[in-house]
Image 1 (cartoon, rainbow, N blue to C red):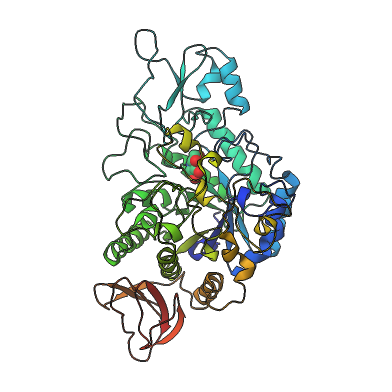
Image 2 (image 1 turned 180 degrees about the vertical axis):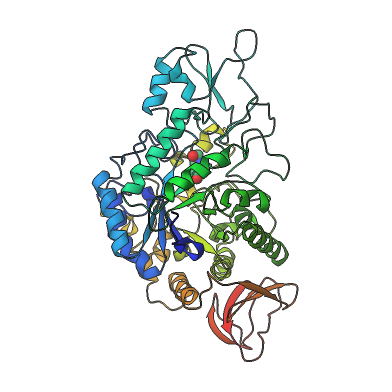
Length: 541
Ligand code: NOJ
């Protein structure tokens, strides 16, 4: 009997990147006890749930998205008891917990892959992964032309001459989802964490588990993370029909549990109608809205994507999600500091053109206020409530994202959005931990963004988010409906219930309708009470 709980339909879900949120033991790497101690911050901020990126045992070649054991906690982050304490504390505070599930690939240090390498070609141990003979006279060429998302070929040759597929790093071999043991194992992993009380799973690379049966050549790079595939027939490694059957099975498992446990798809799929297939009533509950994240700062394009998102989700009975930042993309406070229409950069280094920080923050605050007024569920990434920018001048020697090496240094990678966040301006590591240690160096500008510089400070980004989350709840915006208003071509304006939302993208100020009472504004209004450029306002009439 499926649970009737639908908390997720309008929830605000806060992503914690465990390495970089809070470090209890002072080793410079965030950990679960650190997170637990800081949960009251999230309660006060006013979010409904927390999504934790992976904390499982892992050699950390892709920051934990290379899982060696799906049922444990990496000693860097604590132990299983710490996960239990985190879940219990969150629940006591009224926060739900979503954990990350990485089913497309394991770590090369997972027991199954070690066994596969130790066994000979053609043995059952190899069948849980995608091993193939190479092409060329002596099998010296990869089995097909696929490229890894992080750069370079998607195949690695083993000592005995066979090749295995890795759509990501060479240390992340892809599982063979046609193998019954793989399916059984993941149902068991779901139950392991459901039994420990988690409220859901964010499913990594949800569109990648099934590959086309012939492993057909595909010459274009396997884009994902760096952008969406162009609209067209899905490439042979993504969005294959067979993935849906897996999620139907998982859904039936989750529905056995009380309280509304959810599945969230990380699927870089477009158009929106295609993405909505992941959230049909018997599949997942939510899918990240990456087309929204990718939309430029333009009223026309944002309106189109908002409309198509709402329509395509409504067509399958799902609510829409909204997201602007996560651990894979340049933080929106920096992204929006580049000229409108520029292609999104896969990372920024000291030698690259730098964003306009002031403009970026101004637009980020306006963008966040716009997002939080939209009906549906919103995802926040740790630090965005502080207005935190990307670390755009991180020295290359510190880079750890495998994309940096694998792309031959063509891509800076994602380290700049993963830097440990600042809590206290004057403390060592800006209060990230008790020691002056941080796995990625924090820039000096972190002091001005620290939480303690923003709490109770009118106009701070933190107080803006807090007020927005409170008003969103009070006015039921997440569960509301959107009706567009016409306030000119340079503004996005809509009503959601009693609240009028206006974002001005143009140079000229936009007047609010007579009698409008402003609830919240991402920046002060002008002297005439009008909405200035790059500002969002919530008002009631
Ligand atoms: C998506 C995750 O968000 C990203 O961080 C990771 O590198 C890839 N999937 C591979 O697991």
